[in-house]
Image (cartoon, rainbow, N blue to C red; front, side, top):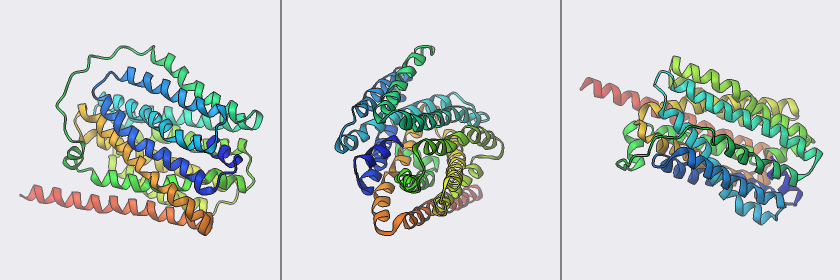
Length: 362
């Protein structure tokens, strides 16, 4: 939110502002896969400390209120480091969990992350209204350094042992989860595109930054409870019904914003997003954890985060769409892309069930 509003204050155009989220997605795509692989071969506590220090330094450059070119130029590096936090922490929890408790355990770490996002969104909005962009960026840069102190309290990890390396794509094929990765990329393309200019959209509706922060917090605030709920449901009713609900709601989310004309409509859209992400993410992550060996969890969950990073294409589509057909046209296209991801899961599930029946018959 702060970056989008800062760029708007510098007079940047819609395509330029939307490209920031696209660049962030590229950083997520590269970083999640990279840190996932690295986390299987190094001590994860040290890796998290390295990521926290690097992220603090990169966000700190924004406190200097740089030009548009510098903001865009550092966006990739910021998300390259940021992507490692969720990848490494989720890999730690997944590898240490049994099948019966994996969904619940993953919901704890995901819910904690959502709480942090909610608190950050609210705080940033009010800091922008009371102080300025420099203070908001400086506050964000200081928070990873606080995390460094907390990491020091964690117990030491066991020594890392060398393991045989396998091509990750062979693991994806053998586990039968190709459709999940493809559908997630399409879903994230739609969501990234939708949100790449949503702060600008709210600004033009006359919504002040402080209220924007509260609206944004309804997404991650809802996730805090929704992730816990869907984590338990994923352990009880199975992974597929939970993540399929998430893919379906992802197609609904842009449609809600299509009809939003004020604070109430925007809150409804953010809550729908929260439910879609919570059910999709915790169900899919638990499913991947069930299907791959424990010593590959970092790599495979990192690649799953990378598939979300492929959604970086969405903002590069959204910016020109808004310029050509307005926000309404952009929302419709993004809803169609998300619906395509849902169809991929439907077809993939049908093919997988068919192959299982054929294997059983033989």
